[in-house]
Image 1 (spheres, rainbow, N blue to C red):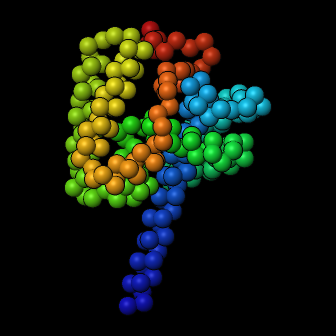
Image 2 (image 1 turned 90 degrees about the vertical axis):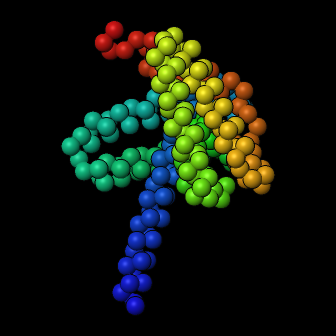
Length: 219
């Protein structure tokens, strides 16, 4: 009846709103990649763009830290809305700063950086047309990644060595997933990620100036 159709439409609108928010937050996470020299080189940034980013990245990081402090004790819905608003503003400024092909390439690099966890994203699931069986397969491989990652961390090693190990585990997992996909799905994946970004993950991940990644507040 009409009431049921209205209820269904309202639910669909909420779902679309949530998915749009997730996409906005995901794009904002890509901004942290701009702290890596390899990413900036891949994007072929101009000196002017590099200078502007050197000003924007610390500013945006500070805004997020301030928001975290201000949102303590606030309802989850309100916190999420605040961070979505910040992410949308950051994306607007970044889109104006970068050329369209640079922004698209950053999205590709972001998918590469996410590794196995990119297959969780709703837009990736839709673009690849993953079936429920394939999504279950991805979750199973994800579980193996988490187990292997924990096992290798327990073996010790420095921060840089642990990072390399984690990225190797993720790369192997992506290869395993792709083997289970159809040829047309693999072709779509290659289009989504583009050519490999050489050196991705080897640069700084925007730590605080002078911070030592090997140390924790308790050491």
